[in-house]
Length: 176
Image (cartoon, rainbow, N blue to C red; front, side, top):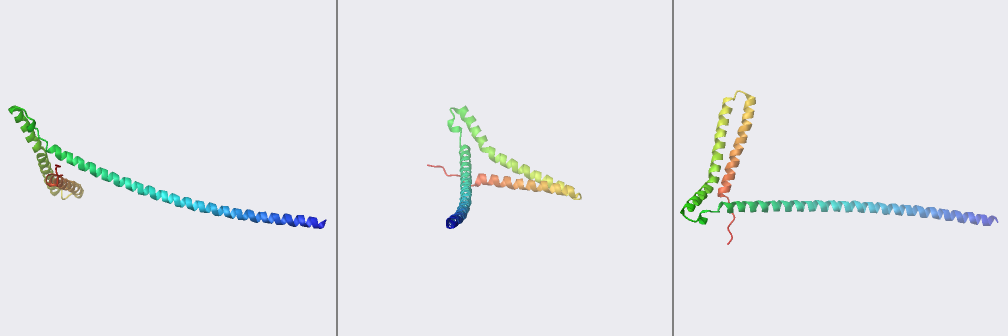
């Protein structure tokens, strides 16, 4: 009878130890699987982030390209509008006179406005230079005057470069 109890106890203990070892091994295996899945999720998230950054850069570049195309088309349309003439559409001498006069005025608008703005800005710069020389003794006034003078100089440079590039820059060739 003792052998029966000993066998039962030893068998139960062996089964219990085997079950505990199996559970510990299963736990460690599950922990390894979880750790692997966590690492794979991190890798996937990094890959998704990199793909999103790449797609954003592509969209940004496409947007810049579309902006450049639109600006080029607007410039071309502006050049085409400049070359439009009303005189050929005139019917009769009175109409031809007025259409010719309109074409003449249209042809003068940009050069006259450009010249006016450049001359006006230059006159403002000279006035500011005189003001600066008058208030040289006052440091605060000189600083403010110099800031304003610098802005006017920047304006003159901008207007000069814009008008020069407009009039003498390369224009798109007409098709055909």
